[in-house]
Length: 110
Image 1: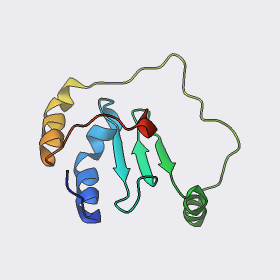
Image 2 (image 1 turned 90 degrees about the vertical axis):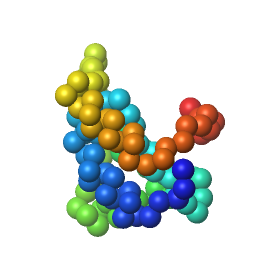
Image 3 (image 1 turned 90 degrees about the horizontal axis):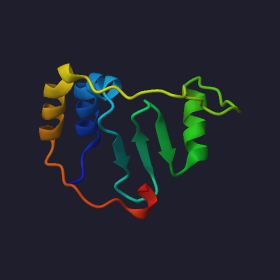
């Protein structure tokens, strides 16, 4: 898939935020166009994972009023991931929004 402009990513996330938040079929990975080590993952647990210049991310988050916590995120055990049939159409629209390309996972993604 070709490189996207920030507005395209923003529009995509805005359009499909309900599906991405309430349905656990997909995770979203957004990589920087200038290097492979800067990327963000929005996973099926609704957690955002940030890779790259973590100190700069922390500074940005502190500036937004977030506080660093010194305890792990604990997910209920057992827990489940929801797949809502009423969101099937949204998934179809999401999958046709961009000309996605499927490739093997990189070692860093495993």
